[in-house]
Image 1 (cartoon, rainbow, N blue to C red):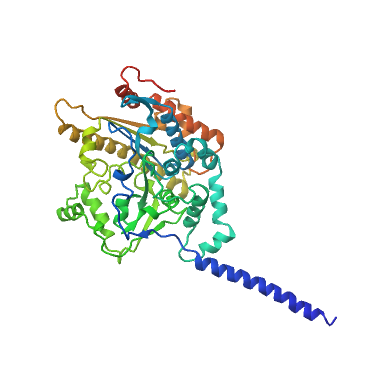
Image 2: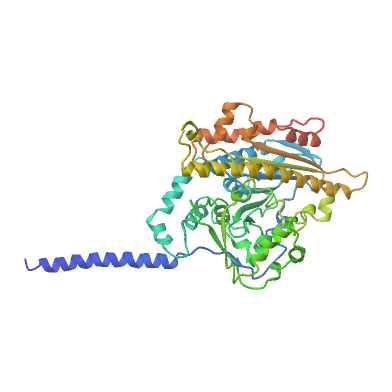
Length: 475
């Protein structure tokens, strides 16, 4: 009996020790938990920066092929995987040899769900055909993300002031899917296309493209930035995720003040797209006033990811009509055929409330308004992008000699509303925007682009231009 108080004291001491250990662990984790901010631009090297001119693949100068991958969760990721598979199986005759059309793709610009496929292909090349489905498309990524966010370790980290659930999911993607790769690794072998991942800047309401030219305005080095964080920014749906945060580094680096921005601000022409782009960029020039950049899903401002990136004033130094960021004078003189394939996997949310006199609730109303806005923006974006490419071709052709070949533009849009069968159109157009789809649905999405491209007049016209004798060379 005399030993009982001693045992109780010892037991209490062990419990206190365990509690103290947990407290110490929590303090240690939360103290160390901080997001990996973008690095300052200490030593700018234009020769290796992540730009068009440094990262365009070494393929035929006669062709310029652009793919745009829209948002739409796993639906978009699976569909755009199918686009890559179709182009890998399409043979063309160029520069005296037969090549895969995929090897002639120069740029992939992507938003949200499409960013996963684009980034994976840019980092791992043809492994996208052997590994991507198992590592991403066939997995319950949505469930795994939730498990990650709500794990005890991550909850402790999220309780820190400089770490969010968005950072937690980005860390998960960095470990599981993108293997710690940075932009120094992306499209770095001269074979993969230049990958442009796009988010939206909440402050400016404009597209924020993960290119070194865009990072110049933050006095920041993109090369060291994890690709997973860019993909997460591109897919950070508001309210579901918090914005992904970048630092706007202090300092007066010369990259912040290009002549075209100064000129556009001085002209103050509201009808000039350069003025609106310059106004947004000028906000980064005051890091004391804007020390951070808050990024969300790029589909908020451009769900196709085409006008805000490939036709961006920022990425072309204010000279979109020349596509000055992507083309030197020599390259512009050589290009003959341009193909743009725009994947638009926008879908409609459920409409069960149509059968009810009470109508939609708050969430259903928000979904319907978002659908209407996105569909309208997608239609307008597609039209304006086509017009921009046509204007660019006209600009080039005006400067060519009478006997030189003109540039041709073929702009193919792949969207579910082009499906002829009503039941099939309904099936794909009402798929949920989640990061979990069953294998059968994923496979149906993957095989769809091949048929849609075979039925596309624009794609057929492009193949006929390259192979006038035999344009149907699919293997």
